Length: 267
Length: 317
Image (tube, chains in turn orange, cyan):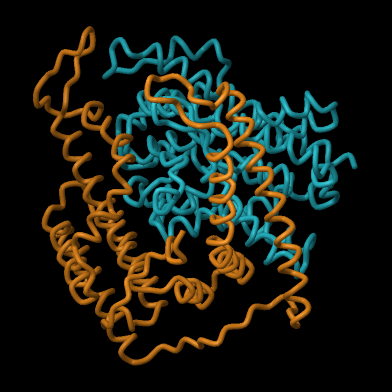
């Protein structure tokens, strides 16, 4: 496994990359909140929001393909929203007969569904841009500046630090299992060597337990090492973020754009 | 062995932005903030400066643990979601803190779950399954080994079902989906996911009990009781906040009508459920809804009962 497996940062030299992470977090959250406030079928506002998104991604030199590919993560959830097409009262568009069920898509339902899809798609892309243009430690540091409880911030940055280590540990456990037992179903649907389903579940559970104990012991060692080097409960950083005038300007510009989009929706 | 390993477990419980109404998202953030503040305070008292490395590494463990799967059939596999295991082994405060770190990192780094709806995701994947699984396990905690393990398994399964139910309710209240379809669908899918979760949780606990029994016999002591009071109050707030919201929400007229039926049924005696419950737009699909409704009410009532019972118990100490 490569060290960068869990990194979603796209290294570029752009205005957006250089922007203070605090500004990026605040504008992203505002953008998503504003999206949630856009009424159903506010097509012009959706278009304006998308234009803003395109503008930011252009400035950040992040390709649309990257954005699109990563935004697919919301697709499974669309399944949950599909039902509104048929259950929201409105004018029937057509009727489908499915056995004894009559399914009637309505115009109001379709409008709601398409709006949900657009809103969530816009929101997730802005969040992707935030992660793609900000290194994770900087992002976490911004949360600290934005008054997120210190303990929570420290725990998350610690988790990020050990994510790779423990994922590797899990990978080693999986590889060991693969080479010794619990193979998946063979091509004919017959179990190759895996034993019963219950047995496989038990082995997976034992592996989780094993990983838990190893993690527990590792946390002990890490803590001891930290104390040995003078840790007193506070994490230090060597990256003092400071807001520059350009950060204020660009952040302000973003907020104004978001407000304008709301205005477009209300006109 | 690379990107594929990023856990896809419980994908359906990571709500993306845009699927919940803003009011529901904000209420969820409020509830989450209360729980998280109390959990941080309790955990800090219990572990002091050791807390950060411990919680951070255990959070990374939950993330990595979700990668460990077991083949079921036809290319599908069983996964761990982790809330019940985390709460049982680490205790509720540290468990919630670790789960919160996992959920926040997944949203920030992988967009697995939204930012504005993160409060809701913390409720759905951390608070609800964690406290539910932990409470049920506690009932069997003092019994002998086999019963204890059964308790953990039942707890883990119900925890996943409750998480699915709350997700469906939040989506329904937001007018994003129809409760009549979402509740049976979510409960149906997660009944299977829950079995995988239960099996892994039990086997992991059995392994730990065999190799490090002292880990499972730690008591959180005085902090546990204050944690319970907080838990009970917060669940009460959750219910109290959601019920007026159900009728005040401007979105989804049809779902409001449905919720009114649903919540009304929750307050009345169960036998009144059937005559009052009519679903105008789903002529013959109603039976499944009613069954789902009864299951939901029973499960929520059971959770409330156990929580208040524990609350009373801790007051006697």
